[in-house]
Length: 339
Image 1: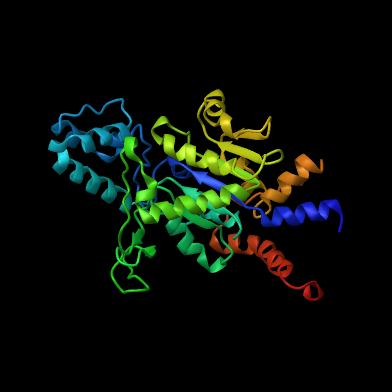
Image 2 (image 1 turned 180 degrees about the horizontal axis):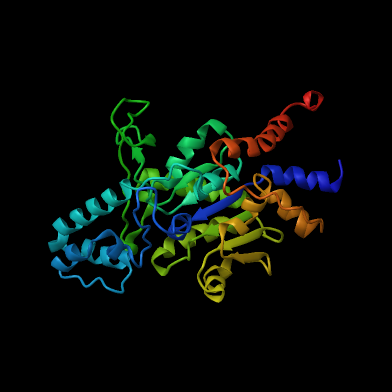
C-alpha cells in the first residue's frame, strides 16, 4: 500500500468534529425559522424572546447586556426565585416552538455532509439539529450528535439516566423522560454534576482527542464559557502534538477577534477563517472533508469541489448523495467482495 493510500485510510477513520454555537442557527435561518421565529444569540436573546418586561419587574436592567450575565444575577438573588423559574419556562417555550422549514436547509446539509465517524456538538438549545437528524435518519450513516448545553427536544430518565427524545419513555424502566436542563449560571457551569451533560462532554473529549479536523461554526468562545473552552482545549491537546491537524472557523465576527479567541488551539498556520458554511470543507467536499484536506495540504493535490446542491429538494438530495453512500458501503466490505 502506498503512502497516499495509507494516509487516506487514516483519514477515513479519524473524525471531523464540528462545534456549533448560536451563530450557526442564525446563519441557517437569517430571516427566521420555519415558523417565523427569529433566532437569538446571547446578546439579543432578551429582546427577541420578549423577556424584557419580566426582567425589569425583577429590577434587572437588560439592555445592551449578555443574557447569561443576566441569568447569573437571577440565580444569585434569592428573592428572584419566582422570576427565575418564569424566565426558564419562557425560554424553553420559545425554543420548543421553533420549526424547520419543509425543505432541505443548512442543518440537513451539515448532517449529510459528515459520516458516522464524525461528530457534531452543539451549544444550542434549539431543536434544529435533532429535528433534522430525525428526518434524515433513513440515510443511517450520519454523524454522532452531542448537546453540550442540553436541547429542548432531549429528555432524560431520572431513574436509569437513559436519554432520548422528550415525550418518549425510558427504554429500561418505562418512566417518561423528563426535560434536560438548559440554563447554566456562568459562574458555576459544573457540567460534571449533571449526568446527561457530563456524558456529552466526555464523548466530545474522546472525539476531539482523535480528530483530524475541527470546525467551529458560529461559536466565538465567549468569556462566559470559560469552562467549556478549557475542556475543549484539554481534549484537543491531550494525545497529539497537532502538527498536521486543521482548524476551520466559520463566523461573521472580525477575523482578528476570532484568531485571538482561538489562538490556543492553533499549530502554526493550520487554520482557516470562513464567513459562510457553504465555503467550508464539509460543504465543498461532503463526506470526504478529511481526505480532501489531507490531499491539499499533505499531498499537494487539490481535489475539485463537489459542493452540496443547495437548491435540491429531499429526493434530489438523496439521489446526489447516493453514490457517496454506496462507495462507503462497498469500502466496508472484504476486499474480495468489493466490485
